Amino acid sequence: MANKHKPDGWVVLTFQTIDDKACYVLFCSWRDDDAWRVSSGSMVLPHLSPCENYWIWPQISGSTYELPVNEENGYTYYTGGVLEDLLAKGYPDGTQLKRIAFKDVMEDK
Image 1 (cartoon, rainbow, N blue to C red):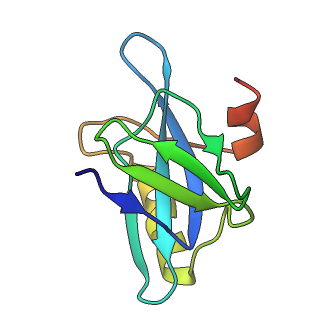
Image 2: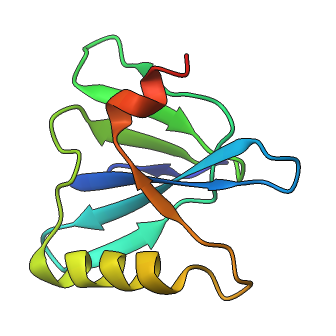
């Protein structure tokens, strides 16, 4: 069964795939214990939940993220530092990530 993640805050990151398509990954943060994770990525755009409180964003791994609508850019001081480090260094394979505003992602729809 696929995991469902419900972070407190989130940021959308993007990178170009080998065939020059946009892949979106989520940097997610939980305030209680300064936990964070980066999603596997998605080539599809999210949809709004029936209650309109969450964006539902399925990922390549099969996991689903439920992102609180008003918590974009929500993170702690510590997880903000982790995010800045990730943006500066990229992935170990050399892939560089770029921060993108959620509204800009949705304009691609």
